[in-house]
Amino acid sequence: MLLQNAYQTACSFPVPRPRHVAIIMDGNGRWAKNKCKMRACGHKAGVKSVRRAVSFAAKHGLDALTLYAFSSENWRRPATEVTALLELFIWALRHEVKNLHKNNICLNIIGDTSQFSTSLQDHITRAEALTANNDGLKLNIAANYGGRWDIIQSVRQLACQVQEGLLRPEQLNEELLDSCICLNTQSPIDLVIRTGGNHRISNFLLWQTAYAELYFTDILWPDFDEPAFETALEEFARRERRFGGLSPVDIDVTAS
Image (cartoon, rainbow, N blue to C red; front, side, top):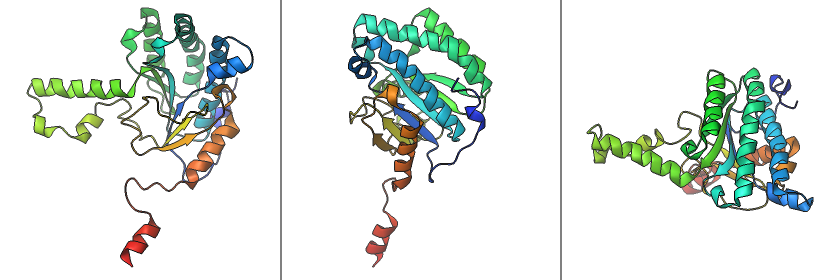
């Protein structure tokens, strides 16, 4: 399998390199339509791209990879497609997690998993427990996740602390909210990749991507391979990240 052995080989790629990459995996349905297949076939093909992306991220030394697998808005899709997606999620947890564990990858599921079936929740719990002590790549799967939900659940945590007298309203700040948001213990997201040609964030990690670089590609997710990932990193290396400040050139002009 693609995941085996690939993790053990460190490869070089353009500097500066991102530590944390997030991917909006878009285009499974259109990929299937282009091949006159059912949408479920596109989602199954997308699993192979997930394997390739995880392998690439691990062997290139990324700290974390976050994949948008199922948004909170995806419940609006046809019931048959939603069922197929959730069944595929269970299948992946059953068949892929042992290999992730073997390769020292830590799996983390973010999102409102309480909406899932008991069976799926149990599979998630077991998968996370199996890989919890691994200190290699952190693989985050966003499932029933929405950026607005994430902010609201963080605010609710802080509101409870205020209600209990542990915090005063005037103490609330960005740092406290950041401590409650998903992925708060991991390195900040440096790069967001969206496949499929659409140029939008789609309610994904709204808080965490405040200073992330955005990279859009027309490649449909099932066709997103290692060269495509490499191209995204090369583009990231060419970007000048300012975090709201000035570039060295602008500083020189201002000083003169």
